[in-house]
Length: 349
Image (cartoon, rainbow, N blue to C red):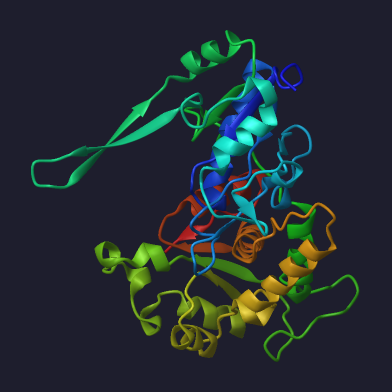
């Protein structure tokens, strides 16, 4: 195992959500290409993908993103190893990274996080007022490359690598594309066959548009004054919903808001929501559970929240017209993808 793992680069994600992890993945790929090593990912966990008891799902990136050429990687399957922290397809202890890394690399065991290179380190430094200040230290990319090239055995890295990988454009996995085509795609006009599906009781005669509305963690006490955090009746995109509907199309609102009263107002004003498309939590959970059941690898990596987010991100990137309430990493991802695809940039509201 030591010889087999000597030219591999093992990457361990941080605790961010799926969209932010794309940026980390891009930096890993760029680094692996620079040092000529095979990229091996350890599955990641996030507070975004956990149950009410705080037990986290293990996420495999290739279930959500296409890992074919030119961007190739593979994720270690923890169920190929006897790692005690992994029980019933969930992680009950973050120490599983150390245990799994040791199992995977065999005799050339690396200890997480002590032996892993870290591109960006965040340290909390106490202030006189009793609070803390975040101090960020960055390991230069050139120095990181030199360290890896000078190492004979396997190397592990953690967190994001300080290298620009913004030009990398990841395509959705076939599973995400399939759900998108069976939901959002089914609502689009089908001029070539003369078959036009009914949407909200009428026939669409123009492509649907999409808008990203992130509330939740973006509407904490510090940001509660933001327009996107106001009551449903004050949302400035309601006029777009009505206009799109009147013109024979529609505006799909992709949001993490789950207040039924808030969503009811959007529905009454003509907006298209997740449950209209069959992208509600229950429908997506059923999709994920069935796909996980049919697999033979004992891995339940298809998490409903991550899957729903992936499908909605694909919709936002591919809709004929797109909007966003405020900035986010999702908006940055949308803009790059839409530019490459020759679509109009998303309009920031």
